[in-house]
Image (cartoon, rainbow, N blue to C red; front, side):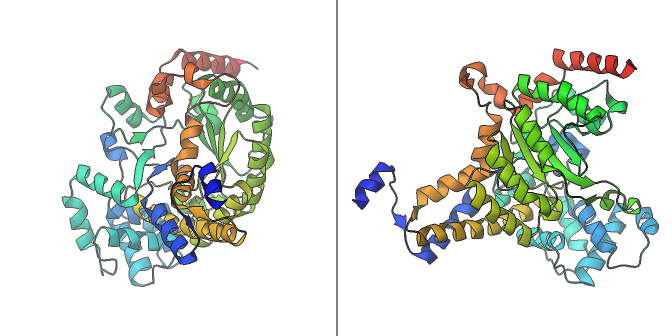
Length: 440
Ligand SMILES: [Zn+2]
């Protein structure tokens, strides 16, 4: 009987009924399954100065700057007057020498330094600087991706950034593991300045974002972005909840968060059932509502735990909540990394938490009488780490079979970017916006 049931499910590997063995296998699968990092601020080496790496960049990242001001008497103004390496020295001294690097952002640096065989207890940055100055970028990138278990990296591309546009236009051969996502922020949140050049399909939105609304953002979304997402069959990713400049004296480190309106996303999903949305909210208080919204709309894909959420206790809570409400139909995590080596700690830390959440879920299932197999664990982790995203960017749901409609190379986001930017669409949209802007 049992055999028959196994055969019916097409399972070849045995069911795992012993709890410690289950735990061991889950940890093994989670740590070895490659992930597609669906949202980062990294750039392929071909982008030159936009490709940030090394100890000074890592330590002057805004997470650590904000934390430094809680443990030093240096004023904001005198900090900003320092050059980058002096800022890094101060951060190191404040957070890693004079204090114990317990916070998630600080421990992250410890994790990645250890992974690179550098001393995380060093009294200064001499050794680390020497290491980063002497490395070969190509080999280093290889090592970081390998250590992080990342197969592909999705960048955040801003066609209005002249440095970036220059690289795209030069036709340089971009590392094939790096993919593009079009960022809509400048057009949506600051449209007056950029109305003549448009279009990407990822946007970070403030906590006060409403849909529908009576502002320019609503019109651009409704009249330009969403129809374009539909026509071009590209999902729209929304990252909601930042409150910019809560403390302007902290500059980039001065952003906070606010509880946002999940109903706004529900309304977009309802009004645009043929557009695929990916959504992530910055406030812990929005997470449960997002899961419920995703149960109601199968064109909504929750993803990741970022920035202020990317802490073990909260990632654990959110992942458990998502597994309970959505099974494996969500994207477990993205790194949001801005500096290359951050990939190492973000993924190492996230994997630990995700493995623990999965173990708990499988154990409960076992308690209810249903054991899983190694194959099933692999299937589930692959879905969480790359499968759901692949499905999302691979085509749209709906009556028409997409395989025929959509050329295979169009699923490549880089191709989409190149196709979109100089296309007729952007010229049409530009002129529409110009018309609207000159209208009373
Ligand atoms: Zn981001």
